[in-house]
Structure formats: C-alpha cells, structure tokens
Image 1: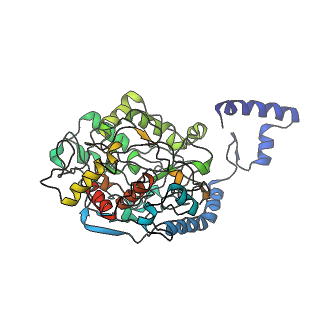
Image 2 (image 1 turned 60 degrees about the vertical axis):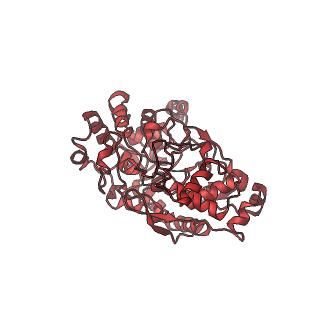
Image 3 (image 1 turned 60 degrees about the horizontal axis):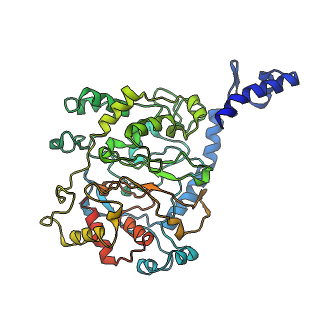
Length: 462
C-alpha cells in the first residue's frame, strides 16, 4: 500500500459512510468481528484464527519443500574429520547436488542452452521453506538455546551438518592475541558484559549491547498478526540472533525489495566478520556503510519493507549518532579467522602449503578466474556482479518461487569461507565442492576433477 493510499483511505471511507447514513463502527462491526471499543483494527482475524489457518497447511507445505530438497540434493551429508571450521566443527563435503542422467564431466561440456533445454541444471534458485509466507526463520541449533525464536508455522529446512558452528569463534582486530574471545559460548545479553568487559571500550560495549537487544519484527511481535506464540516480554529479535557471535548461523529470510512474492529471493544471513574491509552491505542493496545497513534493517528489512505494518508492530528507529554508530564501532572490529598458511599478502606460504593447495591457488588466480572478483588479501573486489545463471534453466514456478534471474549480487569475501556453509546468497550450494561445481558450470571453465579438488583445497586455506 502506498503512503498516499494510507492517508486518503480513512477520509474517503468516512465520506462513503456518511452518505449511507451508517456509522463507521456499525458497518465495520458487521464486516469485521475484531472491533474494539476504541475503533476497528485492520486485522480481520484473531491470533488464534491466524494460527489455526497456518497450522492447517503447515504439514503439506513442509512435505512439498522436503520433497524438492530430496530431489535436488543428497542430504546424507558427509564431513571431513581432518578439516575443521575455526570453532571446531567438521567441514561438510560434497558435491551434494543430484544429477539427472549425466556426470559432472558430461555436464561441464554442455552449453547453457543444452542444459536449459534438458532441464538438468543442478543449482537452480532455492525457495524459502514456505515461500508464499516468508519471514525470519532460524535453525534448530539457534532455537534450542533461544526458544523465543520458535515459529509455530514453519521450520528451518537445511541439515545442521551444512551450517556454521552453533557458537562461532569471535576474533577481534584490536586483540588478535586473545584468539577466540567467545571460547565456545553463545554471546547473549546475559553474558556479554562478563565476556567483553576490559576488552572493549565503553562505546563498543554499548554497541554490542544494542546488537544483543530484542526489537519487534514482522513475525516476532505482540500483535495478533505474528508467527510466534509469545506475546510477552520475550518477543522480538536481535541482530545477533542471525549474526550469531558476529558471524552467521545462516538464518534465512526473503529479500525485501522485490515483488510480487514469487519473485522474491531467499536470502541467507552473511557473516559480519571483516566488515571493516567491505564497501558494500546487503547481498543486492549495495548499501555503502555498515551504519546505513544497520539503520536500514531496523526501518525496513525487519518488516518486509512495509512502512505501515512496521508502525503497527512497533518498529524501533535506531538513532544514527548514539546507536547505529556504536553498533558499527563494534562490528568493525570483528576479524576474519586466522589463516596460518597465508602470508602478509593473503597468498599461500609455499613452505606451509601442500602441492594440491598450491595448484588450487594457481587455478584460482589463473584459468578458473576466481581472482577476477575475489582478489587477495581479503578475496573480494567490493563490487556487484551478475552471473546470469538464468541462462541454464527455464523460468517456471517451483515450490511457490519463480525460477527467475538472480540479478547483481555483491562479491562476498572468501577469507574464512570454510566457516560459512551453505554458499551463494540463498544457500543453494551446500558445500565448497558444490560451489566449485556451480562456478565451473556458470563460467564454463571445463575444469577436470583433479583441478576441482585442488581448488577446493585452496579455498579451505583462506
């Protein structure tokens, strides 16, 4: 609804009601059972009715989405016991994508038009678990310690094996000598001061407090139109509910600035590590500072860009000078994890790297053309790129999402990339091996199996 319509609607309705000879309350009471003594609401159903309607379709929608995932991926995820994320979790191994009657080598030799015609591209856009509904959705590993984040109507869809650490390590640019400051703990409002007192300055401490403070959001609020049973003091979400410990748990949402609903992209939470070296924020919005992004999230993204609904549900406007600035000051000291095999230029130290890793680096900087967008030392060019993956698949509605173009996406830093599965903006590549296969197809690189393995080995070093 446009702002003009929001303003004009009550006046036009009053004129129409006056002409009919009926009072506003009388007519709206006939049409809308939810009318208080203070006037009508804009919601025609109670919370109980909304919940019942959502629960009635939950199982069917969940089954359809689970069937889609099983048709696309092998979800019996294997891990490499010798490869660990910086927090200690085993790195998932792929590729997990299922192929239809071809091998990876055969697929890599086909043209985009041939792959599209046969309908065998393995990495089409990934729908939200209930794409017609959308909203913030958290993985089980985050919900367990934070039960206020339970949604009654839809559950997270990807297996925990392809998600980051539940309590990721925290590294600070200001105190690299401390290593992981979190030490396996999930940082919350109840323990942040104990953990960071004496390490952060007062502004950074206050910024961290705000990042851990709950604010109302589209699905988590006190109105009847919410997707949580709670309507008490334990409602709302925090920045660090998605960006857990300043990293990510890959909580998912729908991008807010595309309509209609079926064209909206699933978006996975990016890491906040290394935001001090980045110049674009948001996968597609290209906001220019982390302060802009912090303010934008509260004003619009939390409420799907609906300014009227944001007001109703209790939007919290982050004040630029004393809140967004403090939050940014903390975020900008979040460092990438250590990479002991990299030198001061972000390149492999030949004395420490394996032959496979060195071959992978040569491919990365050479024939695979990864460095065109991901140059050392941080492996990002701070730009946006359109891979035009829609060349490989038909535009059709699948699981309530249109398999359409992705458009320009920001170049994410690859430092610490092994800590951040699944990959791409929507998580359609569950492992690093899947990601290599994706780019091998989209860039038409024609890499051999050994070259793909070497490239993956290098990525694990970053």
